[in-house]
Image (cartoon, rainbow, N blue to C red; front, side):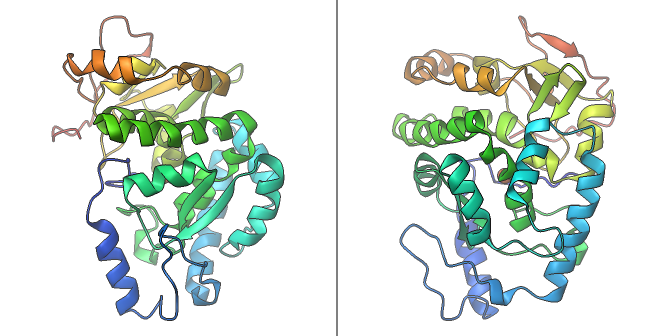
Length: 309
Ligand SMILES: [Fe+2]
């Protein structure tokens, strides 16, 4: 199974924060902590247990090994530049010293998923909200919500890359606009198929850059090696119409040629695009549409027949 952050795409999560917050307060994990108006907290580093650190170490080792030859060079460069801790859950303040110097981004600790507009406001101001808590030992391969490993190992290395860093800020600004235009469903699909589950074409072959794949052992293999999913050239309008999977591996991966392509394609004002797309039907997660640049038409083997989101 993938680490399929259910409800993670902006626009899709409601109510989760309260549950997660309540759970953490009930467990005494946030006692004495102030939840700030922007939903951040000071990272409670003293609350991490030896088990938390051991889980971080295990996941880090596993993924670092797995990703060699599979992940984009930009990700590996980011990981190396950050000097991210291998043996224990990283201290966000330490990561931020390097990150801020490189691209002006910082990681801020949150108790869990935050409301859409808060999330976008953070991104628009170059702050990446990361869950502070670690998954449990029985959740190594699957959990519903993004934990610290997914958020920090998965998302932060690419924030060192100047072009991707700009893309994420632009996404936050776009999110604030989309919320006002009732277009979050369309914009969320863009986040899902790029930031979470994106692939990139390189002279050496396809590589992973999406955080949802990078932080998942199973999907790191499946997304590149399996004949089952479609792999289709990146196209913004196509992606904005495409539903997705939250509880299984993706049926389709969209492939960019470069981060510049991603940033350039998302530079124009999306308002007219939303207007035009609203009149068109959505596409299923596994559909192939006219005009697609099909790099690989999937065999559809093992696809779930449950509803796409
Ligand atoms: Fe994520």
